Length: 241
Ligand SMILES: Nc1ncnc2c1ncn2[C@@H]1O[C@H](COP(=O)(O)OP(=O)(O)OP(=O)(O)O)[C@@H](O)[C@H]1O
Image (cartoon, rainbow, N blue to C red; front, side):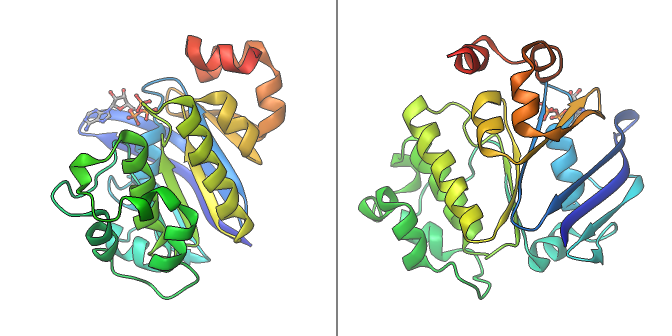
């Protein structure tokens, strides 16, 4: 079954026409990565899927329901977790308090289980959000989204600004989530890490899908990666290595 199906999305910010007929799907238990240069429309796509910046045209189905006109709250309640870019943890609350803020939806993920997945958070459970490193904040953001027991988790650039070792840990966690049957839609600048972990890739160019296919196949085509994913020097070196 498709967890997510979107087609023909047209999204605007005021008069700026940003998405030009974007369509994508995520199947059950699949990791799908959404790549593209800066400004290609990746974040806007996620915001439209979530109902935060509603598409003016097009349709969205989540778990078989037509969510096109739904509020973000309803989409989340149906089972879509969204971890936006830039990690929004509560700076003045401890790790433990941050984890108790989300409304828990019943399911396999409990506070005890997220601590098992992120032992580092358990060690730091009494520390305030503002005392955490970037990597710890990212883990906390993901942990909070997991407590909603989503069927689909959408992550916007989870590796941004993190040291390579921490990126590796975050991606290991994403791989473990798939083992639990969760579907993931992953926006990434780190092309190498994304194509390694993902089953399929979509690449956006100027607000339209320019590539759709197996992630590994996309990652092997050096020229296409350069042209479409705008791989930064850093991520390109990583692909070469
Ligand atoms: N709130 C906004 N108002 C007007 N234009 C916006 C707004 N947010 C984004 N844009 C524009 O929409 C386009 C797509 O932006 P978006 O953030 O979706 O791209 P992205 O692929 O996620 O890029 P990045 O990697 O830089 O986050 C860009 O041209 C951007 O300038």
